Length: 281
Image (cartoon, rainbow, N blue to C red):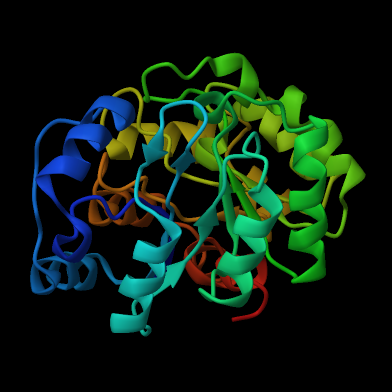
């Protein structure tokens, strides 16, 4: 079984509305789809062997005047299906009440981590406004998911998501586990470099920007850094992620299986590393 650490539940029927979707469509950059009943969601997850999904909201209060799914909606989904979902929180670092919003999400809503999107939220990970958020993540032992590299979303300058723009934040907060999503593609080597330097730096493998899932994953694990770099050097810092609903998790699982990884490496990639990142859940 696998844990998918990068899921945007925008199509789930319990939080889907036409008004919300119009905002999501404009700000997330996705076409009109859904809604999906949960039996359909679970059938697809079961087909791919996905045991749990980490749900990521996004607070765009100061940049776009709304949310791409809210902290409360994540908590509601997790409350209904605690065996299948893990909910993260989001907060716009530029809003004046950001620390209060995040602490409430951790303490009252049960959020298991913080999701940030520097490009879409238009901030640098070293800005002063992020420091209270790092302090709260360290205080409550909550990891961060940082959208890095190329972002599909409109009005999301890629410069904010470059791995080197995030390095000092990783370096200055060694007790906060940080995942740079999508291998910060196209900066795969830079992301690998950061993981070699900083054991609190993680990444996940939703890198489907070119070609098929099999071709993209094969290039990532066999060619970008050589044929066995993952199991030899970074076995404990790479996780499975799909970036649903842009990509389907079962297709990436199929691509991972095509790699022919040893059982211990497959287990680390699909499950064990996510458990460590989430805090031994």
